[in-house]
Image 1 (cartoon, rainbow, N blue to C red):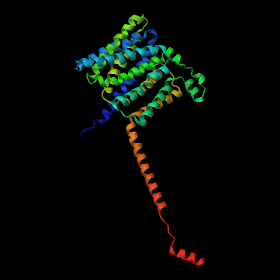
Image 2: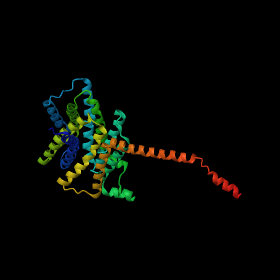
Image 3: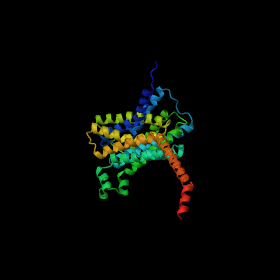
Image 4: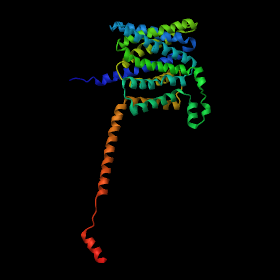
Length: 356
């Protein structure tokens, strides 16, 4: 008697898919307590360089091949600059200069850019249900990240509470979060090209090191007392963010990105603020509002719509086709009835002639 391993393998794959976003969300919670006591570029470098070394160590143990051609190194270098230095640099500066509201919405909206780039470059079909899911997802993370007063003001028409100006966005750092989101989106798409010349896990490790070294350089030139005020708890939080939030999370994410559908995978990024919110409630005693709860619900719905878009499209297109066929049949019958020539019986014609 053989026992099927499909349920177990499906469950394991689901855990693997969710793992990066769970780790990113929990890493954000861990970093909240460290940010006031360190500097942005140093924090970004710590999240990359040690994590890259750890990934390469694991790759060496697994005997994964190292890059050998100049094309591989060029792609890894570009990958490191865009997804490593630019993404982490913009993110670190943006976190310091902006609040957790609009900035977090901007960084977590990168699945929109990934979907658009994947559609153009790789011909991934997004369709009605996919775009609907992406829009619902952005709405969900907006309800999670934006202040409740803004949401109430938008629904009641009181726009005075929405205190946002374009100049304010650029001064406060939200634009840095947007640039970080675009950098990560481009990096997510780039892994497809990088993996043609190098193992994706090895490339992930090297791109962290190559992208992190410039951040350490900027920290050395522009910042001071990078670690002087960090407590033991802060170092533990940095270690968690480095090992779990960077090495493991990015290793898994870019491995999956090199193999599967980028739109579906990137849509799971919407889970990151949910995990951050959940663990912020548990660890930091943060309170989840009614609007944020609605945002969590919409975010989960959006992930379902995006990942099931092909099945939903087939199901509803089938029903639409049946409805169209039924309507066409009814229309044909109606036309046939209209064209029938109804002739009165002969006896009725005779009776009418006698009466006249």
